[in-house]
Image 1 (cartoon, rainbow, N blue to C red):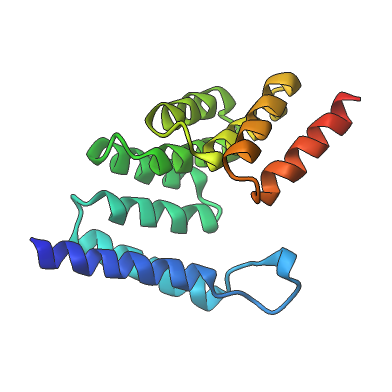
Image 2: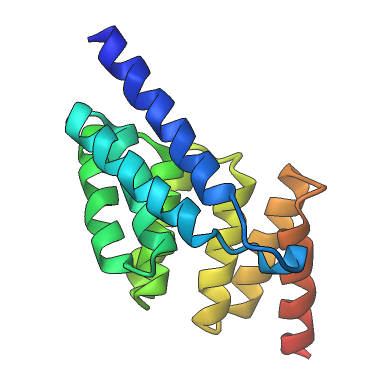
Length: 171
């Protein structure tokens, strides 16, 4: 069983590497190459075949599906993973992001609040919650979440950018 888990974890690491391989272009347009996407999908399928009961395999497949623009399928994978590992803060963040892509904003907020219940120090969860709240026109609450993300991780550029945008929209 331990070897099985190690093998799946190694596959998950390779999936992340495959998704990180990018096409040529500006750094701001980091898009995985088609080769990277194809390799990531193959590795995710292998991880699920080896460890269908391991949350990391489902999280990895969800990541591959989000990258492929298949947020509904990604949502299903993230839900499977969270059924196996309900206390994964990053898993709830991933599910929230998939829900956000599907414009299920109320559900996304619920998932992000659960992520923060599990890990109140997650700057990413605070910032992602701020993004969803901003999309719901809850600007004051969004700014508070961005500021908390900055407090927790002062170098987190996304939080700084998002708080500036929210203030500009607020007037």
